[in-house]
Amino acid sequence: NNFPEVIDSIKKFLEDLPTNLKILKYKESPELYIAKGLVLSLLVFAFSITFLNILLTVLTQNISFSLTLSILFSSILSFTFFILYLQLPSIRVSSLASAIDRELHESLYVFSVFVNDKTPLHISIKNFVSSNPNYKLSKELNDILKLMEFGGLDILSAIDKKIELTPSKKLTRFLFGLSTTIKGGGSVKTYVSNFAKDEIEEYRNKIRDAGRKIGMVLQIYMIIILVGAMFLNIIISIFSLLQPMEGIVETQFLISILLVPIASYMMARLIRLMIP
Image (cartoon, rainbow, N blue to C red; front, side, top):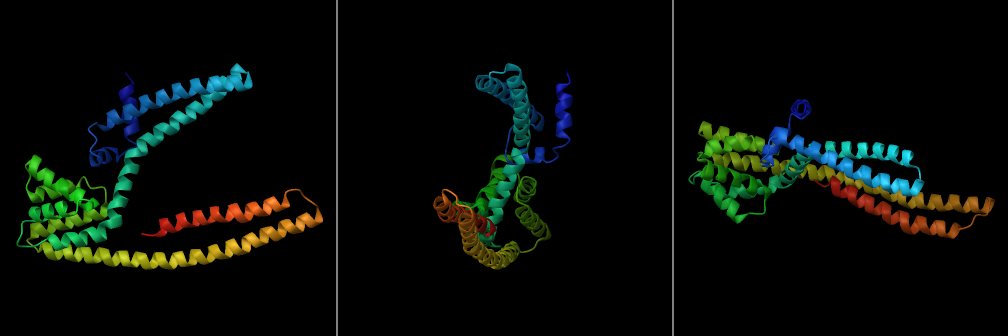
């Protein structure tokens, strides 16, 4: 009897969950999604406590110790799983938003080519979507066409409906401005072109800023790698002279051969994250 109250209590801490589920086109309600998370967490707990208890009992030969440790680790594991499960829609929506924003400057520019004040907007959208199916923007704008076709909405109502279901804040701002332009009788072509130009200029600024930051990071990286590796090898050599140690050559080899590539890989990943 208390199960619905527990779900409602959890739902209060997840204000974005209903919207995120709609954006991701999940058919289930927030209450059902939370209930599934609780059930799955209990299954994770049951499976992990059984597996860990058997494993630890075999290793330690101490049943009470194994059971206590199994309960502790299983509780942490199931709780972590439940938290991640609840945050999964938010993570997926953020990922979708990032994917849309990453190419929005380019896709909007291409879309502006298809827009013409003499051509109905839904026809321009349809032409853009059919010609550029790989853009994330195409998939978002195609939802507008679906709302018109299957929902019986006009273009303005479909845009307003899509505003509520768009993961990207930038795209939401674009659609809101597009809706306002249509309502005010303004030029859709001019609005889309200007918005695309602003996005391209913002992207160029990000590229310039990223280039400066990457240059600074590379300089620091070169200093750390060259000076750091040499410094560590010198320190190890000095210690080996003061107090003979075994494996000195192998240690220096590991520093030179393993640490440098690992640091280089991490630096490459960092640079990739810095590129807009």
